[in-house]
Image (cartoon, rainbow over all chains, first blue to last red; front, side, top):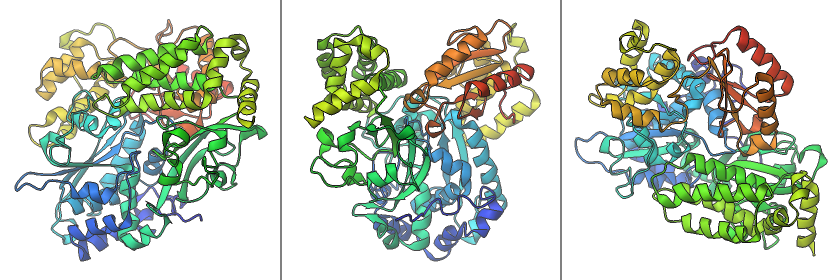
Length: 450
Length: 176
């Protein structure tokens, strides 16, 4: 099960250039679509493929596309979300850096399907060097007639360009991204109206993640049904996983959905096991905002079945015993890692990144950071743990955008699964301060085994 | 850059052309969309975004100064105060922390004799801790200008600080 649909040519020398990409079969999907398909047929193939959004939410792409409003005489826009900022996630950067033309090809196909003639790639400002790679590739695509007016005589026009952000996690939220692309602060908008009705400059807009857009290329090439045949059940196709933390081989891996989590962590072709022969303590399988899983729920579900790398299996058991595939930011923690410190670190991140629009998020993320800081540094009280629980519960669901939820979930999950470790920080702060987490973990392991 | 009198603030021709090119990527009347990128260019050219620089950008894009101020103060990459020629931005989030980002920051603080957020006396280096830069698998890391320095060790930090000391141009965009 090592089928690749996006990264099959990633190691071909010079694949970032137009010539090599074209020689390796690049732009065949655009050729096919423009010559022999109608835009509706492209949408139909994407629907059939079962492709779901790869940015984190997992919403069916074909359905998202079908929501776009088509009022007479109003231009529509297709946007690529390359704001990748979810801690633990670095797959889009890899795709754009290594195979920029794959994204451009996907942009042309998607824009054609949706009838958009002006499309943008919004990329996080810190990836400025990637922006330059993309601009070079876009210039090559223009020179070779894949962008611009009347592409390859099809009558379809497309202008494509890249626009940077300037350091704001919130701009990965699609309405914040649209605000930012309009040259404003990245404050998420109230929905409805949804971007499909009123998006960029109040025009109908669709926003998709880099990886989602790239997946449209193999879908058009091989057909939606063939794509749906890869993967498992409603988790169709392949997924890029960004693996980091205490593993032997961190990096970006393309997996066919349905392989076991155990194979992914311990298999030689993937993470290659835990570094330095240590034990697995916990895992965040889908980026910092998804619930952390304790070691006994990583490779197996609560029912005792194998946990698989798929949308369904990773969320099996709900938030009580499951997590989410999210963006595929797979962070592995060994026995020496401190869950309280990690939770504090993530809370600080969300506090820093809150746009400040909604009080529960603006204030709540700050409180969580403060309380977690005092727990981590040995000044906490037992009641602080309940206080934290209370704060996160009051943030979740009470904000305009999902950043509030994203900040609440990791705190909730850490307390749910590692409450003893929080208590340990209150009762024996000195042991925790000596960073003897192996010992702390043993205590937690013992408790579970008992 | 000191002495930022309004009269001194003017892009050279090649940057004005670049602003024109960027503005042309958006439909007529939507030139405000170019703001974020133009601010990156202004910061790289003038060193930081002072009020006169922001006013200049507002005039270039035919928008109100307040529209520039609110953007410049929202995004974390913009500096509205002077910084060193080379900004060392060390990622401190989750995976980088696991791989020793905190130790790395202390090492750089000691080496340069400054704290997080400060600038060396000679004005060459500013040290700043930042949130996730999308290099989690290659941790620990820091960004200097546009360049990502990954899999860092103390030895590698020594080398790159020496390099930037000799050639402190990291914050200028498009270098390398």
